[in-house]
Image 1 (cartoon, rainbow, N blue to C red):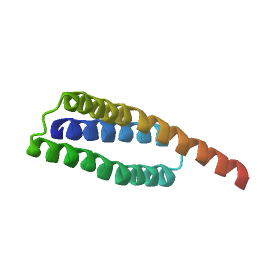
Image 2 (image 1 turned 90 degrees about the vertical axis):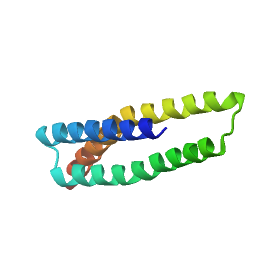
Image 3 (image 1 turned 30 degrees about the vertical axis):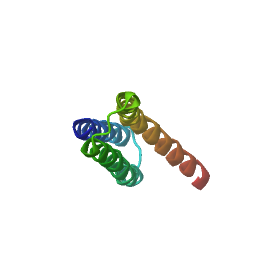
Image 4 (image 1 turned 45 degrees about the vertical axis):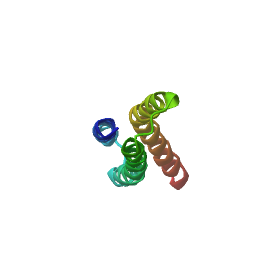
Length: 106
């Protein structure tokens, strides 16, 4: 799980940085997008760490069961889906909020 967690966090951060750079190049205020990036990374790291820690303890206890492999695959799949979809949702939401705030202040 450690390898999956590290790789998913790297992919998540790289995708997030690319999307934020694209949003700033498209004219989004850089301050709001950068704050959104920092907040999301601050939330993603503890969640990934707790998932990794849970599987570390399970492997240390050597809990062999029929459902353990299926649970592992489910957690890996969830982690990768979140790592590859959340940046798109977050940046598009931040862009929509920026547009809404700009429309209200006009």
